[in-house]
Every structure is written in structure tokens, then in C-alpha cells.
Image (cartoon, rainbow, N blue to C red; front, side, top):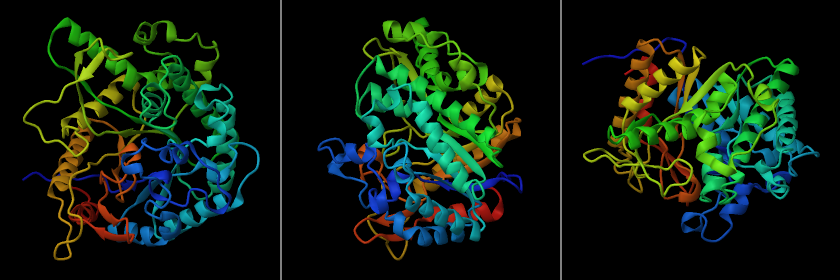
Length: 446
């Protein structure tokens, strides 16, 4: 047996997102978000589930912070609902919204848990979507205004700031394929929305530096190492396109000041000519980058797929999660090494990693056993340790997710939590994986 030990100052955390857990999306003066609107549109979300109640974290945050304390978490990554703070997206500030996040962060600090706050986890105020949302160039100014309000209110409490979570998913799901809010399907809108997300990120980082922010700021991206389905020239080229689209589209502008050269050809006439100064504004120094990893992409050429002209294969003889994602821990080592080799030694956090598996609907003999999730977590933690042994500067690991929650367009049908939530009663029951994670934290490794 090999033991993998992590540094004493390694941060052990868990992650959630506002719309997925908070509930009460319109409480205390909050405005609707695009996810509130999307989930209330029949047929958009499985079983027509909504985030109206979710995990009721808005009222039960103290109970949930107590769970985090019992697990021994060092840090908690959560997101802030933009429309709780600015119900119209800009202008009037809703102090009740800010006060909620003040109470949450105070509770975390009282329990020795470092807050990591994400400014944008997919829930754009609906009022701004009505003005064009991420396709409107003014959105970078709107985001900077919102960010400054939150920075001024919470920077004395929040040690880590994340500007955006997974901008690729925002645009691929929300603007190209229409399966996520705001539900658009427009080839021409998508690269504009992607560019404006990066501009908004740059504006927020610049605003934080300009106001003398005290702590660390970065961005979170979801990455997939791409492997060719064969050594045919067509599949090798498909891998380059898929890698440019998903992995390099957001990181190259931030770290290299340019877009991947493949993108213009991939988008064709839908690729815009961006103003010359935009890339300089996007390329802001960062204190860290968060990497979300769930699966790899075994890629083959497929002309029927827009933009990438590539599709993903399902390798046989593999374990798959309830999301039909292959369990492939080696991919986490590979993508951490890839980031270091391409972009340098910026400190990294694994800001999301976890799996949805079938869980019993209720405890059996007081226990909810989830051995597949334990195996998933163990092997992926080993993958992180292997990357660190090879010189990658990983500072912490955040499980996705603390709680079973609304899994976006899948509704409540997929459970990622290490804590089971009975959505009828709101009872929380830690799963076997929670006990495993507590032991990992206690022992400093696996």
C-alpha cells in the first residue's frame, strides 16, 4: 500500500453554487436570474424542477456550516447571486442580499473555514439578459460594477475571489446548444459571449487591484485532456480543435494575450474582429487558477458537430457515472501537468472534482453507502498527488459537491453530494464518502 501525503498547508474544501443550493431566489428584495427564468420555462429542466427551494441553504446555512466544521474543512467555495446584490443587474444595491453573504462568511470564519467566493456561477440577472446579456458589450461594465460592490462589502472576510466559473459551459450550453440558461442556439452569438466573459473577468481583476484588494483573485475553468480516438490525421486534427475550443479558448487570452489560432477557422464567418485593446485588458495577472475536472475527451473527427467538428467517444470497459462520464483519474494528472507546461507556475486549486452515482433514497441502518464515490475520490486525490510529485503547484482540493443539489437542467435527478439531502424534508445525512473525506483531511492524505 502506498500512502500519499499532502502539505500541511494544503486546503481541503468543498464547493457549491448559489442557484443550486440556496432556494428562496426572490427573497428579501432579490431579482430573478436567468436560471430562475429558465427553470420556470416548461420542458427546460428535468421534471420541471426549479431552484425555488433547492437545499434551502438560504435559511439553513448555519446547519450546513456545522456540517463543514464536522468534516474538518479548511475552505468552502460558494457563489454569490448577482441578482441578490443588484436586483436589476446595475444601480440599486440590495443590502439584504449583501447581509446574507456577510452572515454566511462570518459563520465560516467563526468555524475556522476560509471563504472562497465565486462572483459568477451562471446566474446572470434576468434584467441584464433582457438587455442582451453576455452578447452586449456593456456587460463587462455591468460585471465590474457588481464586483466592486461585493469586493467593498466582503473583502475583509473573503480570502479567495473567483471572477467566473466555467465560462466555456456558460457559452457552449447557454448560447450554442441551448441546453442551459439563457437557452440560446446561435452560432454568431457564442464567440461574442465568450469574449465578453473574458472582458468582464479582466475588468473585475483590474477593479480589485485598483481598489487595493487584500486577498487573492483568480478564475475557474473546466478542462478536459483530449486524446485521439485513433492516430488518423483527421482524429489528430479533431483533438487540436477540441482542445482549442474547450481548454485554450479562455486560458490563452489570459496568459498569452491571444486566442488559439485554430478558432478563427473553426468559427468561419461567425468569428468576430475584436477591438485591438481587448486582449490587453483581459490579460491581467492572477494569484491562482481553479481547475474543474470531471472527465477526459476521447475525440474523433465528426463533421456534424458545430465548431469543433469533433465528437467524444465512450471507451468500453470503463466505469461511468450517472452523468455518463467516464471515470478516468489519470486525466486529472495529465491536465494539471498540461497547464503547468503551457502556462507556467501559477498556483492551482482543484476547485471541482466529484461524481454523481446512484445513492440509496434513504439511510440503511443509519448509513448511506456510496463505495463508487469513495473509489472515485481516492483515485482522483492520488492523481493530484502524482501531479504535485512532478512539480505542479497545487494548493488545495474542493469536492463537488458538499450537498446533493439542483444539477442544472438535470434537476434533482443527479446526486453529486457527499451529504445526502432529502428534498422533501431537507434532512441532511452524511454519506460514507463524507466520512472518507473527513479521514483524508484528518490524516492529510490517502
